[in-house]
Length: 162
Length: 162
DNA sequence: CCTTGACTTGGAGTCGACTTCAAGTTATAG
DNA sequence: CTATAACTTGAAGTCGACTCCAAGTCAAGG
Picture 1 (cartoon, chains in turn yellow, cyan, blue, orange):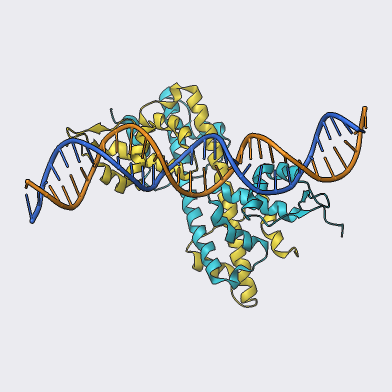
Picture 2: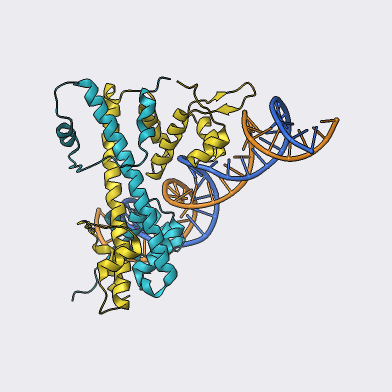
């Protein structure tokens, strides 16, 4: 085994995409545990810590408020979730949230595709293969699309006269 | 045709899940157009407006700041996107964002599933069919799961001694 | 006529999440 | 020996998105 590699706050910021200030802030509000210091007082971070910060960044992308992250960080850090039933519940419940968030996002993607397709359709009304073109434009495969959910309200307004 | 149905701000709030205050606030910052008023000055809303508000709610769920929504609302309202190239670009670029957001979310779902599975696994170590059970617990089909992305950092810390 | 309820307005206050600031320490380079 | 850079601290400031407030209007009920 090699002795644990460690990083400065700057390196950590670079690796995680979270600014130094923000990392210190997270420590201040105890979202992160107090980082180890060297003799000179400078913080040092390990892979492990970087991973925790990455997890925060990831949860942030899901729109989770910092306060709600605490239990997740606990789980990530050391706790075995199954030992704490309320944690298990928290996890499953947040999972539901996220799944429904994905649905929301997918809806927006569909909205955008629809709009894009619509414009394209109007433009070169009569000859081009729509899907082929769309795929080319987006790079995305887009296997099925258009969620069953009430997508209605996204485009109506476009045609309803004002 | 029936004459357009209309709603009070209260009804609108109920239908959209956005509070009256917030709706007024959106109008104040001109995210929503000034609503029509009746003789007494009360706002009235149509299906069309409700749909716009729903779109805002939906975009909000994707974490989009209000300011960034303006162009989307324009598109939704009346503009043909293809007529404004910068709008098309905006749409495609935000589409990319969302797709990557979905990936982030999926990552978190995978993280949760992993944690849950892990706990379950430790618990009744030796006999149960994991996937079957998991599916039952979640209700979700979960056809493939575990995105290829660096999921590593999610669980390492769990086993790395502290 | 007075009250209740559903609204109106402008403005002030709150809250989460940073972000910036001022002042200080320590390490290396010229 | 000084200056630059990389950090430290605590506190204050900012910004987006509400959220609440006070004062007022109007319509219907008792």
